[in-house]
Every structure is written in C-alpha cells, then in structure tokens.
Length: 518
Image (tube, rainbow, N blue to C red; front, side):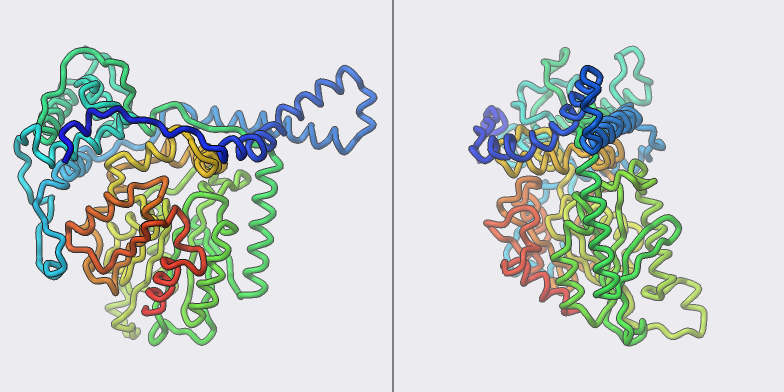
C-alpha cells in the first residue's frame, strides 16, 4: 500500500460536456420558472394591461405564492435540529466498532466461508505504526469526513468539532464552555483515533479544514417550482390508480404508517409463500420504482407485497409528514405492528393461543439505497421477523466512513448524472431535511453481526455496482467479504446506482431469481 496515500491531494474531476448540457437544458429551465414568474408579476404592475392574459397571470401568481411558501418551509427546518438526545453509551460503542473495523487479519478465501470468525469488533485497539497498512487505510477513508483534505492538514481541533457532532449532534462550543465530562469523552476518542491512525494529531487551531457535520451544517436546498411538485403529485396519483385498478393493490394506513399492499386472493399465512416488504429509496416515490413494482407484481404473483410509503423522501410536499419523517423507533413499531395484524409474523400472544402458524413464517425484506437504513432499523429491532434480506445499492454498510455523505451532498458535480442527482434529489427540501436534519449515523449503520444468516447466500443477498457514484462499492464488498460473505454478494463492475433494477441486466436477473426462492 502507498504510504503517502492519505497525503495525496484530492483532485476533482473536470466537468464533462454532459454536465453543461444538463445544466443548460434541464436544470436552469426548470429553476428559472420561479424568477420568471416574479418578473412577470412585476411587469404586470408596470403594465396592468397584461392582466388581460389571465391564464399567464394566474400561473405566475401561483408560482410566486408557492415560492414564498417553499421559502417559509425551508426556514422552518434550517436551524439546528431539535431531536431527542442520543444515547451516548450506544454512540461510544458504535464509534469503538468503527475504529475496530478493519483491524482483524481476516482471510477472504472460499474455504473460510463456514468458519465462525469473530471479526473486527473482537479485536483490541492498540497503537499502530504509521506505515501499518491498517493505519494508512484508516487515515485514507477517514479524510472523507474532512472533504478529502490531506491527513496532515487535519488538526486535533478539527477532530474535536467532528467528534462533538458525532456524539452530541451539536456545534463545538468554545474551549472554556465545553463541559468537563464532554471534554473527557472527546479526549478519550482522540487518543483512540491517534492509536488507530498511527499518527499523533497536530495541536493548535484549525487550519481551515471544514469537517462534514451533516445534521448541523447549513441546509443545502435548491428551490424548484410548484409545477414540478404538481407534476410529481399527479403522476404518482395516476400510478396509484393504475395499481389499484389493474393489480388490485390496496392503500392503507396503520398508526400513521401509510402503505400499499397486494395480497393474492388464494394466499394464506399458514401455507402461502413468504410476503415481500420493499423499502424504496430517495426520489419521487412509487412512480420512480414503477418498473420494479411491476416486475414484483408480475413475477411474484403468488405472494403478498407490501411497500411502506415515505412521503418525506418522495417529494410529496402536500403531505402532512413531508417535513416530519418517522424515526427509528416509530417506524419499527408501526411496521412490526402492521405485520402482526396481517398475521405475516407471530407475536407472543399468538404463540400462546390456539391459532396455527407456519414454522416458516416471516418476511422477505428488499431495500434499495436509502431504504437500506430502514431495513437496518428493522433488523436491529426485530431480526426474528426477517427470514431473508436483499440489499440493493445499500448505503447502510460502511456509512461510517463518510464516502456516501461526501459523494451525495458535498462533492463537486462533474457529470450530467451528478447534477441530476444533486438537483432533483439531493437538494430537494423533504429529502434534504430527512438527510441533513434527521440523520443518525449510529442507527443507520448496519454491522455484519446484525444481519441474520449473513453468510448464507439463500438468506442474504447484497447487490453492488462498481461504478456507483454515491457509495464506495469496493469498500462495502471488502468489508462483507472479510467476514466471510462471498457467494451472497452480486457485484457488477460496470453497475451504477439504481441500475440493478433495470430489466435485462445481470443484477436484475439475480435479484428476481433470488426473490422467487422464498
């Protein structure tokens, strides 16, 4: 390994032709609708005769009024998050897990798949040498949290700011205002980092490095017109109507958790095939997953399919919970309650009753991208309910390393695809609020030990793309492989984010074949 790797300055890619094409012909025309509407209203004040063009005036007026409403929503969530205090003991345990990850010398050869190996959490955190490959790798991956700056430019003060956010979800106070018990926690973490990195962090003030403090950094939101939200709303409504009319899909709500569900008439929980639960990712809701949902309904017609709806990441600005996403406890409580009510899983009351339940009872859980966070929450809370798990483009693995946050929100866009994801997804108000004000790195991180039957390829499948622009697929593959997960990883070297659901691709075939085994 190159000993100087953490000291090599990060070079941003030059912007491609596609970046400027998307900027000029897609992003700017849509974004400019709002300022043009305001200009039209101002022109009407100068020339009242324009009021004769009633339709144009009403469109401009609606866009202007909506821009004021949108701005008020942005301001309402732009401050520091008002979330409940986190469990410090749990956070410290998670941080220690981060430091221990990659310490164990675990072989990834095929013969070791069935060996019961403890993995990194059992390793002792000791002082590493600067040239130790494990220390070099740690320094290289950790600098993603500092915007890819060289390791030598990161001071102890910079790490204090990062750690204070990680533990207390707050900006670092002035030195004399830091409580003594907080200072003790920070100093202990700094010593552990220096041992793991093999290098002592330099003292002194910050050198200008800005660590990524995801939930307290300035909210990065780009405005978009009412026309866009209306278009998303209408297309999703039309798709919902089509699902209900053609595929007998029902829409319901259980204690605040909205969902869509299809249960075949001939299916019963005692003898039927296991139900599939799908957690979708960021975007425009069900419409974005139209092809996948159609594939599931067609290819898995003999079993139920449940999709929890997430208006906060679906650009449903008209929904009451658009800016109030469910947290880990609320989501897992609602979903587990719904599954029990559907008799897809058994409860303690069921086991003491005379009702018969299948010994193979349980669900198959499929998640994509941001949906893997909810998948992780449910596995942590109710691993006994999930018989099989499929993670597609999972951001829940290795999210503690910072690549996902940097690539999705902080990196410089260089291609048209980068700009499309940043404008239409990353900087949309509901999505930005969910990620930048409600992100909990400890809850969102899924560790190998928390995956039931992780080494069994029939029970666990992880689908990765080598050209994924958001997550670091190679590091996720390496992390899982080092713990004996080999046959359960579908790695497409040329796959990009979201591509596994494109029909005809190798990953798509693997996913559908795996689901049919349930």
